Image 1 (cartoon, helix red, strand yellow):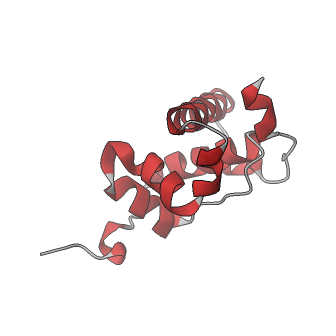
Image 2 (tube, one colour):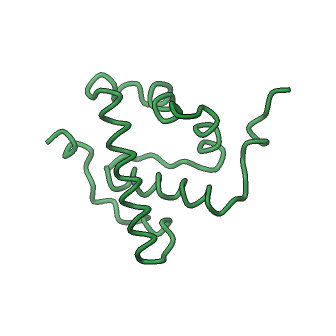
Length: 109
């Protein structure tokens, strides 16, 4: 039996923390993206290649300028920084809203 998107969405605080960390990473990198619970569940359901699949499906234009591995590594590194910062501050990562000073162009430098 195949799962529906509804089946994949959870109310797990750890899952939400990861999703918020991705959203904070997107903000840090100057990417105007936001994953809701459904989008994050879809990405997670794709396993290890979920982020790459998301890039190919939703932001293929970026793959004309950047290598997929570069983008995935940049996003995952930013996510790790955001998670570490949130853990150190013991504050929710969702507080990234309004801090959009990042620029994706600086990744190429």
